[in-house]
Length: 290
Image (tube, rainbow, N blue to C red; front, side, top):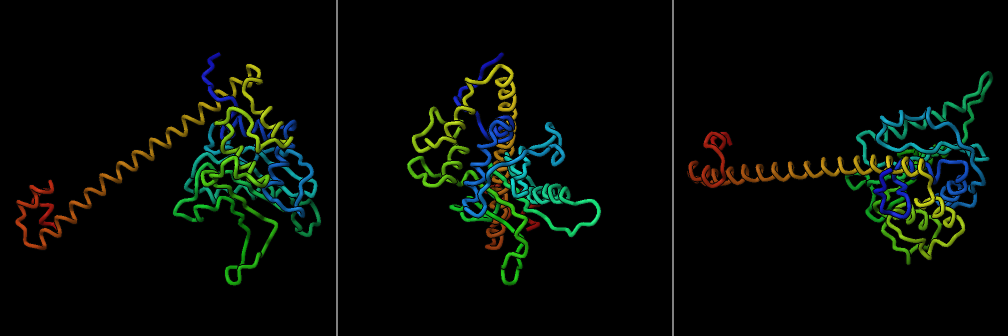
C-alpha cells in the first residue's frame, strides 16, 4: 500500500475525516460537544443524539461536490443536518434550503395531525467565504432564521441555518477562550498540527486527537483515508487552476479595455489614427469604430 501521507492527524475537510470524527456512533460525543459549543446556550444543551439515515438527503457519494455527513436527532426531537462544504457552489443557498425539506417532511404523521413541527437546524462548515463581502471580514458565524422584513422580528424560530466561514477564523492558540473557539481552531488546523496544543487539554479533545491520529488506523482505514484525501486535493487543485485561469483572463480583458479607453481619449484629442494604432496595438478599423 502506498504511504504518501505526511500529516500526523487526518484532515477533517475530507469526506473520510469528517465522518470519522462526527459520523460514527463511537464518536457521537464529539458531535454533541461541537453542537453545544456552536450554540453556547444553556437552554439548548444537547445531551445525546441518534443518527438518522443521511443517504436520503443527498446525492450519491461519487456525484456530489460537497460532503454531506451527518443527519441526527436530539432528545428534544430537534433535527440536525451537519455538512462540510468544500467549495462555493452557484446555488449553495438553494441547496441548503432544499435539504431542510427532508427533516421537515419526515415529521408528518399519518391520520389526524395538527402540523406541529420540531426544530430543524442546518449546520454548514464552509471551506470558503460568501461572495461579495456578504458578511464582515471578522464575522465567521452566521445564524439565519425566517424574519419579518419590516420590523425584523423572528417570524418562525424552528428553522435555523448556521454557517461557519472557516477561512475567517484566524485566532491563534493563545487567543482561544471559549469551547466554540477551540472547536473552530481544531477543525481549521487539525491536519497541520504535530501534537495536541496545550489550549486543547479538555477530555473531549483528548479523544478527538486519539481518533484523528492516522498511525492508529488499520490498513483498510488508511487506504480509505488516502483515497478521500486524494479526492480532496484533486478537487482543490482543480478549483485553484480554474481560479488562476479566471484571474489571468480578467487581467487580459482588463488590459484590452484599458487600450480601448486610451485609444478613445487619444482620438478625442485628434491624435492621428495611424499613431494610435501603432502605439496601442489596435487596428485602424477598431479605432474608427470608437
